[in-house]
Length: 385
Image 1 (cartoon, helix red, strand yellow):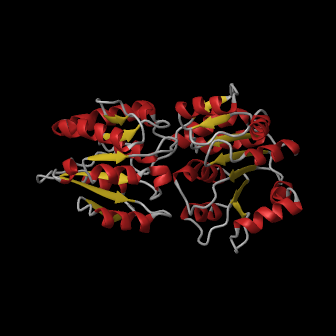
Image 2 (cartoon, one colour; image 1 turned 30 degrees about the vertical axis):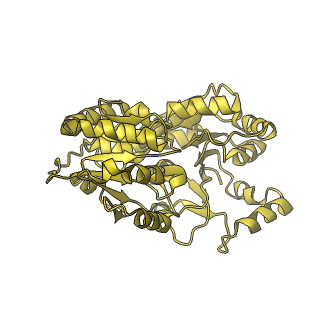
Image 3 (cartoon, one colour; image 1 turned 180 degrees about the vertical axis):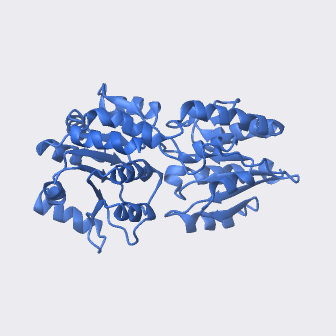
């Protein structure tokens, strides 16, 4: 059939920021009359971004049956071998983009593309120091990666970590930026304090990744209970109910739940700064969006956070994802709260130096020289219309 295949390895989530780069790139290609196929995990409800792809003519395939039983599928995969990868034989792509939620969860897709002679690139959205592969798995991952035309990562820090974990130089590693959900020229008004300083914690409600429990620990300390500061949690996720129960158990009157934020710029019209106590990241969209909106960020020093946020200049960086470290960074922020507006302006300048206005166009420009001529020509034509 030909065309370009986009394969998302994300499992267990309805949708997330890690799905934005591949899906928006796929949409732009489909709108440029490139034949596009997407292979994604089954979800009970079709995310709006996939509906857009379908409307644009993209052939979306769900690789998990409606029963959505992970154990069943693992057993079936063992019994039937590479049956899950037969989609490659059906779609027969000329090229593939393998988008990973982590930094090697797509290695089996890499292997199967190589077996079929399908050239491919990879995107790695996150990485963590908490899991290192054993030798056998590491060798398999490295072997799979070696066939990639390019290996895209969303932060320099995650490139370095992956090199260490796999003991592989990754000479074809490149850094690419994710698209964001605010205007590049966003400039929401600076909110009044009314005697209260308001922080927003925006992200998936899953402490294993986003560390909201670390933030709760800090806010539960007597010093912070006495201060005129409020934190609003925005987002949804598998631990929503347990986090709300923990807030109640800890009697955190300075924490409220704002639900899922549909209008990100409106969030920053009513909040003074972002606080993001993550344990695992790539380069969070919420940091990019907060900085574009002129807000300082209080973040942990994981993944690409400190590549954007300059400590004591455009925000405050906690040395690690630990309560005492976050407390120290928040204390520095509190002592300089009268400077937050100026620091937000520095953040707005910084992010525009690091992140392009059109991340999808920048990604496709890097991708185009690697593509078959028939596809690359359509991209060139589509991008100039």
